[in-house]
Length: 107
Image (cartoon, rainbow, N blue to C red; front, side, top):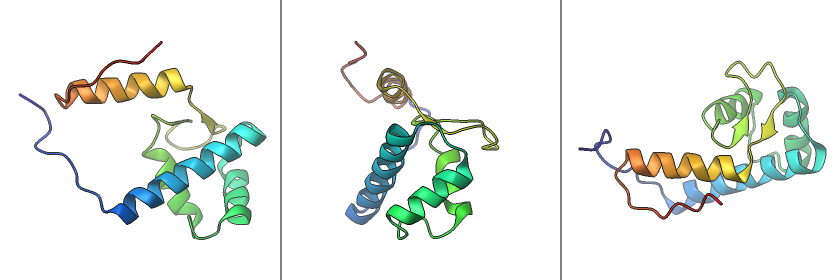
């Protein structure tokens, strides 16, 4: 029996916004290296100020996506990208917990 009662449902707009946010942060960290949240927020605002209008929104976004971005929960350390191997391992683990059939592509 699964620990999840059902899969969440997202609109096309919500999925698009999520992808744009992750892609921008991923790109900024890849191009500039690890950053503190204040610096990252300034880069995000200069690039696309429609994605995060408040610092607190970026903070909560990062805190809820530690499978993608590496930092501590207080965001007192630098934020960096997680490796693709780590990301795939997390996706595989979540799929197993949700009883969702997936093919592990970890190598």
